[in-house]
Image (cartoon, rainbow, N blue to C red; front, side, top):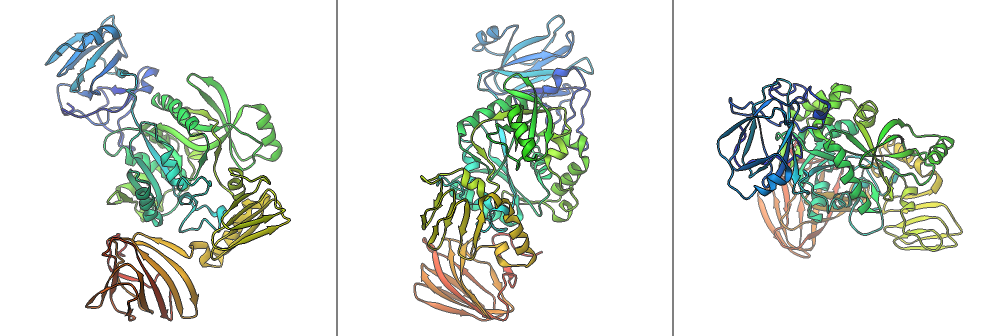
Length: 619
């Protein structure tokens, strides 16, 4: 029997006596075979330890629960340390203040298919005579007793269409792109959940971005339940499967709200209302997708064909449609029966895993094996690279949503944009009187309908329109706004030619701070290094380069071979080639220094680490 003091957070409890072992594919408890209503039920997360009562559940403290039997006439038993029972909701409320009964109360619901009970927070157990029977416990009071959901933030994209601002090492979800000075897209996605009852988020990101995620969570003062780190990209179906498996690993079965980390939503209150509607359907066993009310005949998005209206603001899904031609997109828009496919979802973890097992068991199996071989490091979970490489690359739409019969779409009209191109960045504004979006040191003369960003230098435009101009320290993009999707072709060429502009900015973030490349030439490189208070670089050595360090501000603790030095402003030291060394900031303000490298090879891969507090030692 469940132990004292435990909490059952779901809004439905499902108990069944004849299925007492977990599903071998998902590790979760099997769904019942009785009446259709049972599909809406919450599965028991773990077996009971009592041999007397094969099924039990802990009810939420101080809530009124409505119980119903799948078959009238079945026997039940209650073992509770403080409950009242009545045939009506009002009767149970009336008796709430009275002492509860103790021990086992046996009874028969013959002729009575339901009853109400108030539980003070201990046990309620059922002994069901009929082998296919089930009991349902739904909190009715207080009215806000619905279970919290768990956000799943997918933050693993590479944002190639937003080069040169978005790079492989620092993609668009970690940039502030909407011009509202309210944080990065990742931070805005998490902040958008304020006002909704939810547990800390599960974040799924790339292994190479783990310290960016950690730093942005720290700066925004946001909590995360777990950061799942994919060693390589395998699309949305595996990413969500990893999150669902991790979310159920503790025996719970939460509702998951799956969000991309790089979406813009203007009307956040409308978004929150849509989430509340979706949660009702997710609690009932539906796989909910959010469909965006289209504002124009867009050819860059997939579409959802809506079917019949379902209660509480949802619609059946007739079909998913690929990105259409301009003519077909116009037909979709005029019909009023189509929504843009947003890539946002809400469903119970176990329901998604069951559907994934049904339609793509290979993905589920590969993800489960990869997760079983993962390594935990603080709240990071490093997924096995060897095992995850065997997982198929597939979107959740293709893997599950296009095949399931449990799908449902909730419309969302909230000024949504996936920010998938520079044209989309222009679209979300703000604009001046000539419909330009200008950022940074920009001088625009006789310029219309343009997006111009300056990040380091003055940019001047004269007599142009419909242009995208993005200036960064090491690259400038000039493109026709109507061809902004083709920026990905530039990125492909940069990758083919192995140019550094594909991978990184001159400013590179590290867990200890960041560095900025000031100058790079034949056999030399100059960097400005900033180390956060209390942080340190690894104990390391280089085979092909020597280094000179000059402190600009702050205090540096330097280890060079067997020497330990404390350096302050305007002091310097020399690190010979092949010598173990480290750098730390023991002070309370950032340490700023200039590093001059010289040698035959200056690549970042010429580092041999001996000690590292950030888990970067090679195994």
